[in-house]
Amino acid sequence: MKVTYNDVRNAVHAALNAAFPQVPISGEEIKQDLDPPRFFVRFLEPSHKQELGQRYRREHPFVVQYFSTERGNEDMYAMAEELTTALKWIDIGGRRWPGKGMYFKITEEVLHFFVTYSLLVWEHPPDTSKMQTLKQEGNVHG
Image (tube, rainbow, N blue to C red; front, side, top):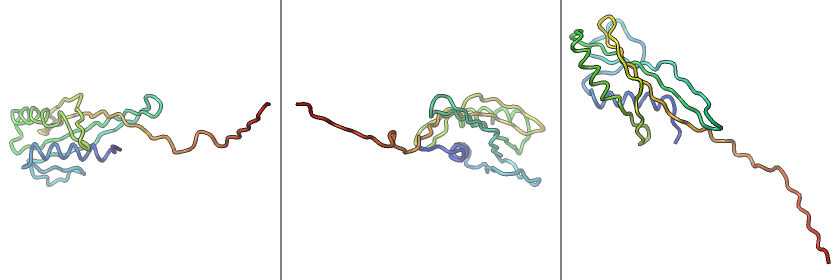
């Protein structure tokens, strides 16, 4: 199964939508006339590093910003607790992937919740034959 960056992004959106169906999710630029409550999901700087042979490790860091109607720290702490549960696992193609490195901070009345998903991906080698030509000869000694 091939897992793309968009697959991981869509899985994060799906996990949020399943846990908080009443809260709209934005994934693009934040507009000035934002109507809370709302999530803004931003894909940070992913990495793709070769580990061994055809195997690569991809790190998918996200920040989920939560804009609350109440804008109080108590509400933000409660939402951080719920996000920890909601984003603990995401489903991609029928497989579950764990979130790691979760932490949050509250800045200017906005909750910033950080989570990273680490996946191993394999690059398939090109379909070329190992031998170009083979010359075989045989003799019978009598």
